[in-house]
Image 1: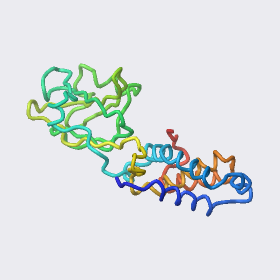
Image 2: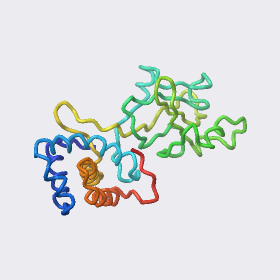
Image 3: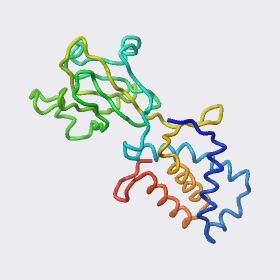
Image 4: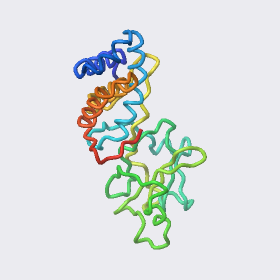
Length: 234
């Protein structure tokens, strides 16, 4: 992740608008003074970053930030074992309030890390509680689920067999992008061009410039490698 000055992003978004402006778009843009245009653009940066970072393929994400480690688990009880015995069976970790998307998760006795999580509505979720061990997640074929609980989002991991020595080896996520008090925002570096064009798209949409918005949306999806048959989550 890299920190970018919002004022510089606003300038880049205006360039994207100018480069793709059409006669139709000029009608909408012509009625908007510079100050209010900057305010509109600024208001689109957070939602643009959230949408692109939530939908882009994993290989375009950065490493993210950590949400759990062995010391944290002991300090704030963020990890609980359903069996009541550490390192045996499946576990639950409370996710941070600013969680947007998982990057990678691995328990120390797993053969590999997992990036794709299922939901509690997935048909595979019920299988994780089967009494037949061969059809649920295990260290050789781990499964993770992100579920909603009364206290917020939780990550459930299936499962472990290593016992007391087991610990969280990798736990990285992308946070919901927020503009800081100092006027910067953390973005995935490889996705910054796509975020700039998506913010320009949202701006053009607000200004009623449909033709311009359509062109910018297409460019943004191409830059983020989001394909037309993929449902984009807002």
